Length: 190
Image (cartoon, rainbow, N blue to C red):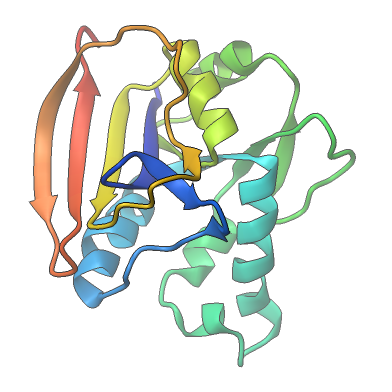
């Protein structure tokens, strides 16, 4: 049976994007090992919202066709491109490509079915819309958050108000050389 891991980075004040848009964390070999390396060493399936899927597809799929692309020099590009993906979207139609499959509108049913069919960890890399749906339906088994040493002041919040009360247990805290900290929390009772 699969386990759903919500894996996202967030500023210390709770934002995943600045007002001006996407703001990646400061990168380092330590971060690559403990953040990306950890996730891609364990992931058997990926879950995305439309925007994040299209952003990542554009970046990673270039590694297969353009040896000069930034993605081509990243050791785990093949893993990113090869993993099966489920994409939640109300606007995409047809085959989304990049080893992806479009999901219908029933988030809870789709994730429950994935958990039944995937042996191992299913990682959701976001964005905020799908993350909040997964939280709202209490589908997340593990929260894996990288807290970055930034205060954005405003932007897009990771967790929207009005979600359910969910109790978690800290299972790991990993400080990184960039000043970020990876926090892993398990859903109590699962």
